[in-house]
Length: 132
Image (cartoon, rainbow, N blue to C red; front, side, top):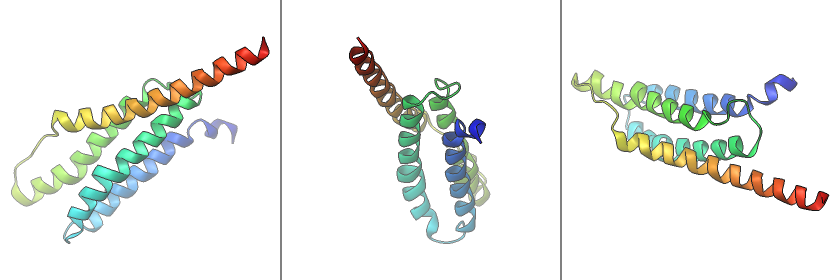
């Protein structure tokens, strides 16, 4: 169980990511696509990315510097497997994710990570000050 402890943050992200992918395709033929785009793509997934990136920065997790970029790539993969694939199936035209979406989620992820790292360092400085 101890070895699973370090992987809880990526597993949590993968669960939310998978749930959003499944929910998109369940509601694909209904008016729920707009709610999905607004809810998952622009609110829930960026919020989860911010919180989990903060926790990655706060805790000592394996390869912690790479996780904000992994979260960004997973976000783009979700966009490609939902919105862009759905548009392709309806219109026959494939749209590629734009750079602004990539920058948006990367900035959110790096912000959470930086805040977590800052708090971790401040806590470390306070512990070292009290030990002296």
